[in-house]
Image 1 (cartoon, rainbow, N blue to C red):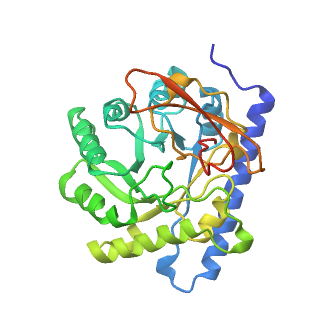
Image 2 (cartoon, one colour; image 1 turned 120 degrees about the vertical axis):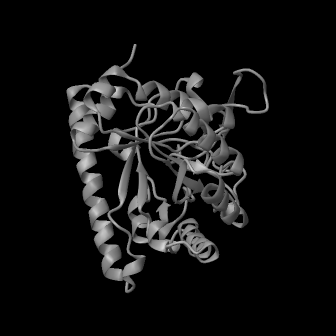
Amino acid sequence: MIRKLTSREMSSVSSALRCVLDKIEAAADKRKKAESDPSNVPAITRLVAVSKTKPPSAVIEAYRCGQRHFGENYVNEIAKKSIDPQILEECKDIQWHFIGHLQKNKTGALVSCPNLYMVETVDCDKISNSLNKQWESRNKTGKLKVMVQVNTSLEENKSGCKEADIASVVRNILDNCPNLEFIGLMTIGSFDHDLSKGPNPDFLKLSACRDKLCQELNLDKTKVELSMGMSADFEHAIELGSTNVRVGSTIFGAREPKNPNTSDGKLDATAEGKESSEPGNKMVAATNDENLQGNMTTVVEATDDLKNMSIAT
């Protein structure tokens, strides 16, 4: 049985959403005042409300409050929510973002989702080519917006292409994927970065990657977005130029227990946050091992020594 939000929870979503939007506006103003070059100041930052593990009623409540962009990490979950009768009835202008690790064999199910707006986690030609083919085969109108995910921290447990491969992946989208629209770069960022020690190096690196990409492929920098920043650091990310932030727990509260059947494979950290930053605390994350046949679910227990293994929102 699908849980519905209580009246108190609905009120909490409304007030939390307003608070996040106010903080986004304040951070954008701060960025504008600090930047001498107007071309480096992004347009209004897009808020993607990460509704992973949350019931449809949470999505509907945020939608009623004016939110339109929603993010999901798992293909199975976004597929289910996108066809939920109540969401289809009450959220006609909803725009879904896929922000999780994507496997080629899941691209068909993903592009079949109604109101799919953007895939933020393209990291290789195989995925972009498959999305392009699947989008065309389903006679979708317009183009599917995509971002290329970059593993700026070079952590093995995070998805994303290497810095050296960005131009190649983007060039393939531009030259060989007529059904896709490349709009920017995305990264996770270190969960445990101490801002007192300076700007998040992952955010600085993504911005530098954009500069290099635009120079190499002769792209208009103002039209290449940066998706970076989550619940713990979205204000900081905006100050460093983010045009797209992914915020979940700050709006919807702690994530619900996840059904193992919604996992799409590789353990990733494409949503936001981490279970805990306190030494000795443990977390449990469920994932399907791509290298195993069937739907076997592997449960991984890790300490803080295994950095950024969380996919919490």
